[in-house]
Length: 360
Image (cartoon, rainbow, N blue to C red; front, side, top):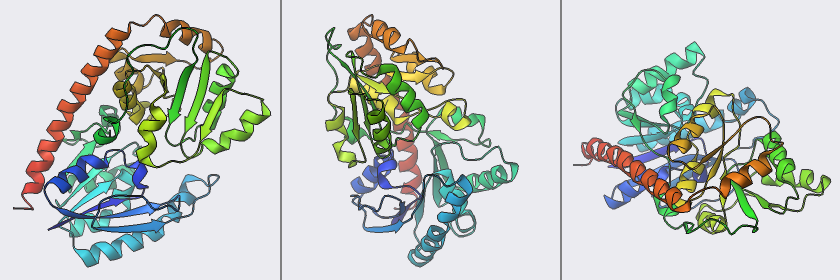
């Protein structure tokens, strides 16, 4: 018996992948992975076979043109799927499910799951109906945010928190607030692409001795010219890095930066992996007002909500930070981690029960 993980994103952007791979590994179930590589880099994963499809995308291209660039992957993936005849397919992201919808519904009915990561054009009626059919024919489908139910078809989704447990448990949690007067390291870690907001934050905190502004991840290099032009000295930029370097990059972080957009259904409803970083590190997190991230981070008392006006952010956040009771914050983070573990245990039990039917 053999499983396949099918994805149109790089492995390092599959933040929940370990929930599947750990189960497969512990049960001696072989699996392959078929995925798109848009960075032209070899990534490590303990799959039996790794099928990597390089694709070239330019940032200035529109969404439709980018979609067409991926069509070669469909042909590539279909050839492998038809040849290997997998017993079960883990489909990563709605876009992947749509790309392979015909094959999945006709050739793998009830033998695949869909991992829904975010919004993807569900407001379009034709796309919504195709998504609905693909979801209905899945063995199960998961969502990483309860906020997604506002745009998805009705279905008994399994909620799963998208965090890499093995990776996060290697992170070093804070044991106290930063001493007053020492600069606060505010870190954005992940794919950097909302440059207007990033530049706005840099200008708001730039050359303020109370802060060090960090952007770690692919895309951060595109902020370098802006930083130099504005002669800003307190910004640390590091482009793409191996996933296993994450704990080391986070060891000096005091605040997680989750300011990457709002007033967009995809951004407003998602739960960012940065939420889990904040919980595991015992750190506050910057979130935009009116988002689902604001809702859940405030539930655990770790969120600082930011509006459109950044002009007083430097002073407002600094005052807020030193009013926090660290012991209370750490307890809230621990409660959040426990709640997440309980929810994911439900997912793992479902996965175990479902896949056991195929691997008896």
